[in-house]
Length: 458
Image (cartoon, rainbow, N blue to C red; front, side, top):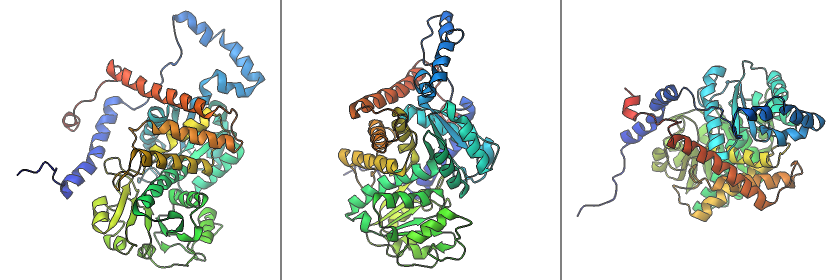
């Protein structure tokens, strides 16, 4: 009797699959000469319409905005513009590769903003590493944009830029490597803990890596209700604990603050010590494989949860984590089960705060977005290999947007206050339009189909 069940892929096949996106990326980028373009959104019935959209008619719109600057959110596309700002100092797992090297990532970010959230986002890669200068540039850009997405800025500078810009600007400023990562990690943990039958707010959670992502994840977990003392952080030197001499308030006030609140048991030792007996590990550290050892996972509590989120290669291959006893495993990659990726967060969160013309974005909005993501997966059904919504489940994005918009209204930072239904209909329409526009351009050959993989790799 012949079994219809597909044979389990070999390690070599899994490795080949993992390497393929990187092999295809340069030729695909070269083929399209970039990923984004600007096209009109208004009707142009004839060239006579330029008298309305430009001179002389446009002067009337200018005068209205001069009298009331907030009308820029009504009479221009400012309500839907987001600046993706980076200095290129910490790009993916590549490090400081400079502003030009960062541009493909920022274009990719803009692509996801548009396709998943209907947001018009623009890459802005800066030739400065001075945090004060970055804040100054963001403030100078404010009249054009409805929000700022900070991206791939090294720690601890990223904390300073985020806090300073948020305090001094009247539009949402968000650092996706901090808040975006924390949002989706929280959503994943909500459902992973539900599947293994443990109470997350009472469990031990270790965060491997103390960069921007995990420092903010610690704060968001605490905001959600996890006991601060139940969170353990580790960096390249080992477990982070109160009084560790190399962590000072002067050098890194954010990391220092976390040491004062977490690790109630006062655990010390190397990175392996952070795994012993804990229920979940979230790694946002050095790309692997081999950054996390199988024997470390074996020392965790039963029904362990492991999120290995480094890109482009996770800290440990997911099949190795499973062999070591992990029950729920997630990575940051789309080609493995359980992708924990910012893309499920930032497009919809910005959609929500833009639709109420919010003045800021808060960690409470991250929690609201995470809760909606988790709820969606629970409602449509989830398994240990499927704990979060996927990017092709577009219906989750309007729901997430509404959750953030309502939280903005609740917190008193929204300029307008539509109803829940109005927000949902608006977000759905904008996101549908973005997706349909792309599909229409492809259908008519205005976005051409790429060659086959084989041709690209010749």
